[in-house]
Image (cartoon, one colour):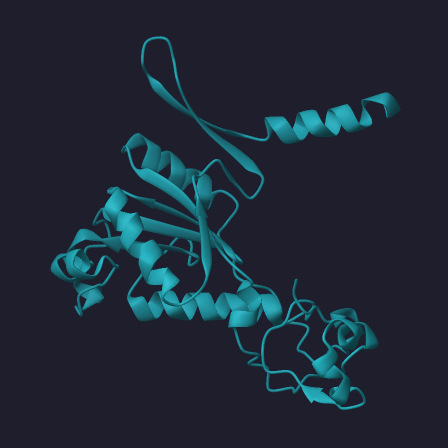
Length: 239
């Protein structure tokens, strides 16, 4: 369970900036194009989700935001009863606030830039790391992903990446040439946040299936078949 605020009561322009609320996300076609690239090159895939992502970020709006303790919260958490009637200043990007997605998006992007990821020129919410950037010796010793302190402006723009990340708010997809590189990045993320990982069976409602034809050719299928069938079964009597 988590504490959610009734952000719909916040007044635009007073408690938050109505033009600064959206989290940056990868373009609609970017994940599909990148997954096709990874599949053609025999890469490994994994999906990662940041647990309670928003509350890991702090509110950055110059406009202060306040709340009070509701009786319902005090009922479940008795130690909050003493705060009823007080006006509380909100510091974290709690769920329910209009500006929370943007705060979390900025927090995640800043961490990637701090580590050393490079955004794609065609989509700033897809990132890559090339082979020249990785400190392979340190990664082997720590089992975490670390990058060399190099001038990235000298890297060839067409240099082939060895790991790619694309994000949609608190969901991200990871694909890499080597499985161990994904493991290193997963371990590095766990030092920062609590995360859950799974195979890339789906991403943002898209089903991702890897099958083999009779001739042994491996095929990747991306679609929404199950969702379409579920909607059809739900509404077919009304059609």
